[in-house]
Amino acid sequence: MNIKEFFVGSACGHEGPYVPDVLFWSIILFFSTVILSSTLKQFKTSRYFPTKVRSIISDFAVFITIMSMVLIDYGLGIPSPKLQVPSDFKPTRDDRGWLINPLGPNPWWTVVAAVIPSLLCTILIFMDQQITAVIINRKEHKLKKGCGYHLDLLMVGAMLGVCSVMGLPWFVAATVLSITHVNSLKLESECSAPGEQPKFLGIREQRVTGLMIFVLMGSSVFMTRILQFIPMPVLYGVFLYMGASSLKGIQFFDRILLFWMPAKHQPDFIYLRHVPLRKVHLFTVLQLSCLVLLWVIKASRAAIVFPMMVLALVFVRKLMDFFFTKRELSWLDDLMPESKKKKLEDAEKEEEQSMLVLEDEGTVQLAMEGNCR
Image (cartoon, rainbow, N blue to C red; front, side, top):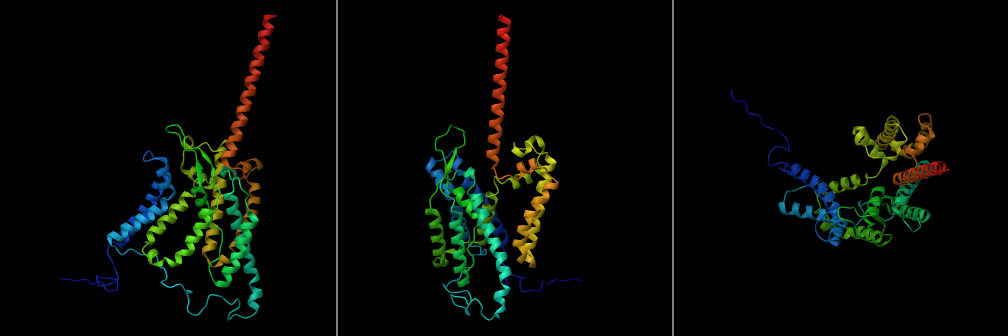
């Protein structure tokens, strides 16, 4: 008996919405974007081409990657998922205008009830702004100009009011983008010995790049015909690269890697000199647990209490006093950068060694004088 099977469904068969090779091509675009962005970013330390060319390629690594991937995708003609952008410059909904009525169809008492959620949003935005500002203005970045904490917060508050009236997404500090922006403005020495890494000199402190970034972002609403050719896997690859590149130098990420690293292969971190490894792992587990808890709350329906949970981390930090000594916490959770601590301790060790050498020389000299007598 011959039994024939037939697949039933709108996605079955070549006449349905199924398109071959799209998934595989999207995966290739995604990983190719990540690898090419990382390779071009490190091209500054390559041995090929003059220094100026290598610097330009490294600075525009992400832009070159996006353009290359878009051209390859367009040339092959595989219908990969593209960025969905509107064709007309107008509000997203036809039943609303450019300005939003604060009350709308809601009753008057919703204004009073919105005080508590607005307080939570204020706390969240304030902490996000200040945390980003503290990370950017670390001493190891060698910034010379003023920080401008109050001016930045004032501008964020003003833009929040404008965005709320117009029904636009809120203007907040983007930590990953800010760190990437600072890293792209690093100034390194051009002259160095063969095989030696360029020396970090500081940050190019100017406002031109920041201004041009937001000018181009604003003008992107008139470039929808071009932006609609960008594949979504390419954008996801850029996001992954930016997030992964910002993890370098973060102590929390370095401590996570220590779980799978034998003791003889561990880097010379300053806190490993003064804190037992089991205490370091315990501190990392506590931080990781808090991070997972915050992510679960943010992804659930209880996301409205997310700012309060961020404030609760202050009490978690106080509870750590029962598990760690103050000396251990000073090395694991101090504001001083890792490089600064290591330099101070190395300087103290050199000073101690020099004092011991002087004492030994003095002892030898006294012994020689005694023998001469």
